Amino acid sequence: MAHAARVFTAVTCLALTALLTGCGTKGTPVAAEMDVRTLDSGTYPVNRFTYDRNSNGNGATLEGMRMADAVAPAVKIDPSLKVGRGGVVLSSVADVVSVSRLSSSAKPVLANRGFIAGYANSGADMEDPAGKDTPDPNSTSVTLRLLRFPSADSAKLAAKELEDADFNVALNQNQKLTMPEYPDAFAHWRPNVGNIGVTMARKEFVISVFLARPTVDKADLLSWAKKTLDAEVPAVDAFAPTPADKVDQLPVDPDRLLARALVADRDNRKPDQDNFAVYGPNWMIGLAGDMALRTRLFTDTGMDQMAVADDTLLFRVRDAKAGADLVAGLILSLNETSAGAPDKVPEVKCVHHKSGDINNRCYVIYKRYVAGVSAGTEAEAQKMAAAQYTLLANSL
Image (cartoon, one colour):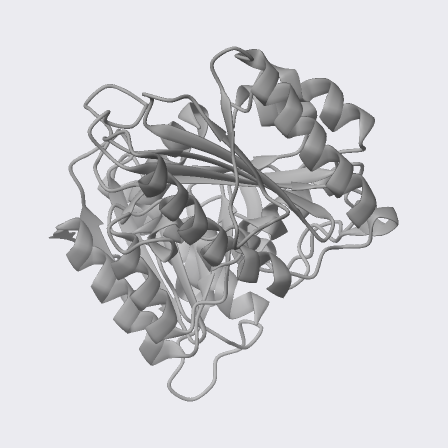
């Protein structure tokens, strides 16, 4: 999860301070709404737009993005696990091994059983040590992977084979464990080592868990493994997977959220989990330093979907009041300082923050949408805010 943690920490800094609410007209001024033609949008494209809906062979990435909401954030496993370590879309066998750090022994199993897509996240009860992308050895941490296969039968075979392959990596050290509440789950540990691995098929999916505790106690590890499955199984059951033969037919921007998010260049865009993506709430919850707070903010404001497009995040919330509440809550949680806002643009808040090179942000609230735009300078952030407001007014 190292790559994911770095990427998503960077995005979180933007995300925590970027939101907007809206519904609007196509740029034609109405009562109480300004004429956006008077705003300076620079060279940013701000006309109403629709991206190509064709996945162009990127269906696995799109399904992996959808699956983010089928993987429970660690805070739902236990309230103490409030520190999000990030999440990652798994669109290939190589991603499962290199990015989510499943054993390389899994490669032939994933390939032979027709792995389609996946998503993994990680959380802990302590921040990672400074300068490292691995959990603190004194922490409790959980990495949870959800792997998609063509059918329930192939998932069941894959679960058994993944367990066998991982167990055999240290055949003389590993010991098998059972979980009475989940008789279909495979589990093992190494005595005198405070971690446990669990693999279980559920519908067309394989749930893969790696859980570490600061103490070595088999009963304790099994208890935590049960809590993890207690949180994850309902999330899997509530998720509607795309039929295997229709994954490549998934639309890139089904609700036109990406089309409403400001970018400098619309050409040649394709699904990219970090720079051109649509997610449900769990993706950003899994990035938070306090996942419980983030969860409450999203629940209270009705945030149900978001788009990530370069240096812009776009959120859909319940209404304009909810958007204002979400912006206020996120800015407060980041301890950011107020900055100058662009002239004439309504419902904009701009701030400075302390980390990173892109440390100027503006938040634009427009009806049911909240947009956050980030830039290296205050002047550029203000110009982006004007352009983003114009784009939303023209798009709705």
